[in-house]
View 1 (cartoon, rainbow, N blue to C red):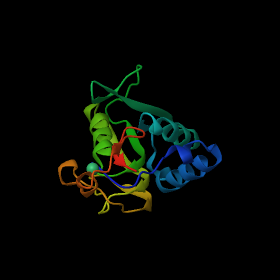
View 2: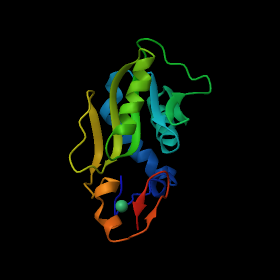
View 3: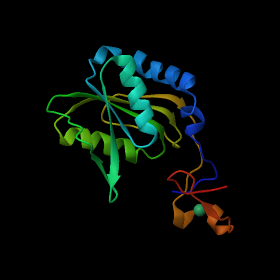
Length: 166
Ligand SMILES: [Zn+2]
């Protein structure tokens, strides 16, 4: 997907004092869910999962992509019935957060919910688990083949892992 806007999550994640407060808000909303594992996606999700788990007093794990497929590596083990909280920095279409839920469920986990700092989608993201987002910030988003910026010849750049125009 293309957009005229990019949110660089590392302007927040480079500040432990601020990240701690954001994760405290995740914790406030899910502290009564007896979370066993907080799960995020590399790279940003490693930091969010770790800090949220540190505050909850549980484990932190993260997924990585292997040939495009999101996986648990490094011996991370989720068992049947493990109570998993998914954390994500920024959601756009929700595809990454849905993959995270899918990975956890593939091990038989009980996904008790998901939390994100920002939902930048046009419509609020709907998931089949409780979803808490700290900031709704709808921004433009285009399919590459119907992108008005491409039609204007604006070059595409890809900071992080996303494509965008600047
Ligand atoms: Zn474009």
